[in-house]
Length: 294
Image (tube, rainbow, N blue to C red; front, side, top):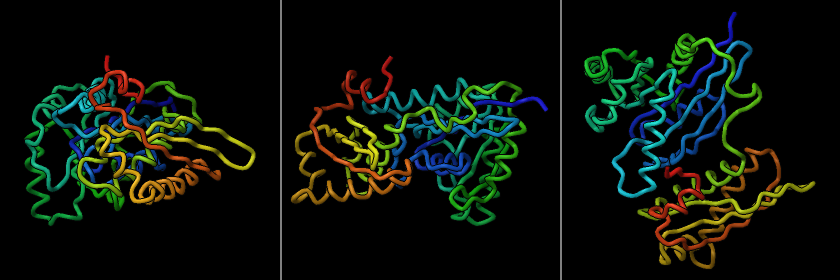
């Protein structure tokens, strides 16, 4: 049997379950998940290896109309995912309107790659509503194969996995067979911290924050980590820290638990807050944080 390998890129609008599905298919928690839109900012690869195949899953930011340079970079990640895909997984859900982002959907229609359309969160719908949605999407994307699904509950993910393997082209592995992702450990550390900020703070605060790991030092007994939480304005610094540091301490405690589980080592985590004025519009800041502005 010849070896198969390919890029399976998961795209769609915000909050339809792309990261949940990616984690399910990869079998590891690589993408952070919250109920807030724009939780995923980067394109994250999760690599599944078996003897006869290698699947490179790509989780992407939710497609949106950019309001600042950070969001322009996020949209670029999603558009690039359409260009290098061997299989495109376009994800929607039972509450999203079909014409929510018609420009991006038109780009999906023009692709030469096979398209698998996921209608997610079917546990929040009834059979008649679902039948109507399937019919509507069949007309909108006539060349796509449709998979009604609940990614959270794992319903129909096995059938999707099977079909993806069938569609993979014959190719040698693109990555080492023991590689899980293209991102370094520092990236996941920063994401676990940012996830807690998304969960524990309201309004604009989570969207004004970026996390940078300044030090990651392994010792015989533990891993020492120093991370900086960048905020866009001075007024946000006090909110992140909280009364007598209580809010920042909560973020640190909860993030440390996830980091320890991820790297399977004890962790000593230090968090600091720094004002990086309007970093979401600053090209230099964005490059430093891994958002390509070319």
